[in-house]
Length: 112
Length: 113
Image (cartoon, rainbow over all chains, first blue to last red; front, side, top):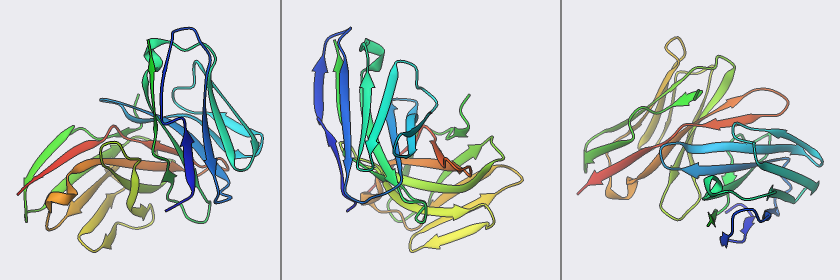
């Protein structure tokens, strides 16, 4: 299994509070992605990174920011959480040579 | 608008029969397509892929077909087994220096014993 860890695995937070989700990899893969999974929408790309300090927006980036200061860590921040951001968040990593992505176990975030 | 579409939210198949999951896409810049399988409470796992220069790729019980002119691909599972019951996501890669990967909404497959 690819070495990818998401933390926390579960979180309940209040509307308006900041939240940071962490994705940590031990594979030294160049590409890292944050997706959210919602019923009827599947996996939607929030942000992705193609190298340290190199990030770009995905399909549903509003309300989210990311940072990648080290190859192994990709952080997803909700500056002010809203109920619409209640979802399951998945981090994925990929090496350019191998085009398939490896996913973490997911983080279930509930905003109340 | 979704660039990768899976129009069947769910599919039920008898054990031993063929399962066919369909996927349509709109972006001509996609150059690589992948299928992922997801069990509840787990992350998606890679199943099979196909390059846009091919029209078929086979791996054991799983075969993916690509029809570029129709912007359509399908995943065939033969024979279907109860352990295949899962959500299947179609995904496509845009070949740029950033390698964006876009997923479809998924199809939930139930294989009935």
